[in-house]
Image (tube, rainbow, N blue to C red; front, side, top):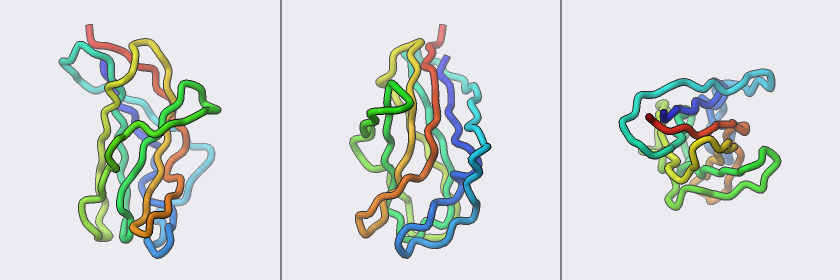
Length: 135
């Protein structure tokens, strides 16, 4: 079964990047990412990451990192930056499907936000997901 990995509510707003606006939510260290089921008809394993962000003025996009161990090392897994569709203060929802996972194996992910100035900053905490496959 393919599963969706939903980042904790505090990732709804991006941390303040140079000139990118103020966050609309404050990270809460006690919050834990929620994992929910999603229907899928594929026979291969995958992990789906979904997030929503606001106050993205000045943000170019997002980088996704994955590791086999929570302590790392993490490596970037998206070859193309997940682009912000437009430079507005509106909220945007994003989805990234990691299809390079093995069923039954546990992976750890986090996101970085990249400003249009080229600077990057951590956008999310580390989330953990065990890949499964539809039967």
